[in-house]
Image (tube, rainbow, N blue to C red):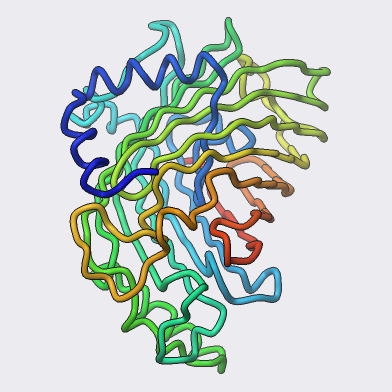
Length: 335
C-alpha cells in the first residue's frame, strides 16, 4: 500500500541510472508490464527506419461505453530522430542491434458507466483523461532474437488533456448521450513516465508460427506497474526477431497476448501524485493489485501499408469496478 507522500519520497531517492538498473534486474526475472496503448509490441513491428502509424481505441467496438472509453496515438519513426537528445536517457543492450527511433503523441480517456449523470458515481471509476508526448527507441538483435525498447513520456492528466471536449464532440456527432459528469474528473497533474521493455523469441516454425515472452516495467506519475505474459503469432509473416533479406510482399497473421499485471499506482484511478483536490478518486485499498489482460487481433501488411484490428479484455481494476473491454484500429505506412 503506497501513499502519495511515501511514493513521492521514494521517487526522489532514486537516480535515473539506479532506476534503470533495477528495471533490468526485474526484466531478467521475467516480470512484465502492459499499457492501454502499446506501440512497441513485436506483433506490431514494422521493419523500416521510417514509418507513420495512427492508432484509435474505443469501447464502442465492444458495445459498451465505460472504463477505458477511448484512446488514440500518432506514431512517427524516422532516422533523423537518432539525434534526439532524449535518447541519452536510454540504454543499449548490444552495439550490433538494429535501432529505430520514434515519437508518439498519445491521448487516453476513462469514464464511469453512468457518464450522463452530473453527480459523482461512487463505487465506479472516476472521469479521467491524459495526453503526453512519448520519445522511444526500439532495438532489435537478430543474433540473439530479442527486442529491447525504452521510452519516456511527458504530459498532463486532468482537464488540460481535453477529455471532456473530445468525448462530448464525438457523442454530439453520433447522437449519443452527452457526458456531463466530467466536472468530477481527476484534476490537472504532471505525467512523467519512464519505461523499458524486453521481448525474447522462445520458438518459431518458419514464417508461420511464433511464441515469445515479452516484458516491460514502467515507473512514473501516471502508471507504475509490471506484468507477466506470453505472445503468439500464427499466419504468414516476417519474424520481428530475425534478419529479413527478402521480405514477404503480403503478410497476414493473428496474434494473442496473455498478461498478468501487478499494479502499484494508477493516476487515472487514484489521482495525480502532486495534487490532492480531485473531487473523487479510488482509494488505494480498493485498487486491484493483480489484473488479468488478454489482447488479440489480426494484422495485414502489404507493400508499404499496415492495417490492424485489435481487441482487449481486462479483469476488474478496482474492487467495485467491472471488467473492461475495447477494440482498436491501426493504420500505417512505410516511407
